[in-house]
Length: 65
Image (cartoon, rainbow, N blue to C red):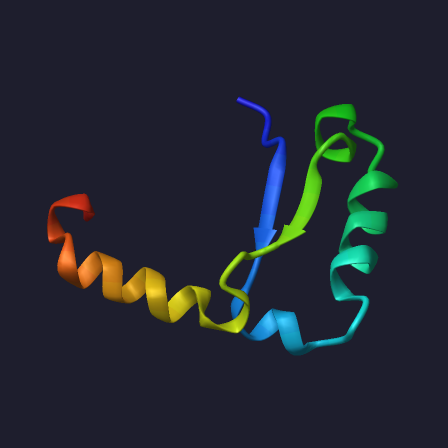
């Protein structure tokens, strides 16, 4: 199944102001069509995304494999 959206959050959000656009440019330039069609977007929670995800898994352990 091709990936249509790549979400970047956590510490990567602080790498550079234009980090998402740089990653999107690299993905768009990829020679495989199913890779180059993917959109790169920032996580809605920004740098707090991993922390919120970990807390959610702690609260809902039934989501773990």
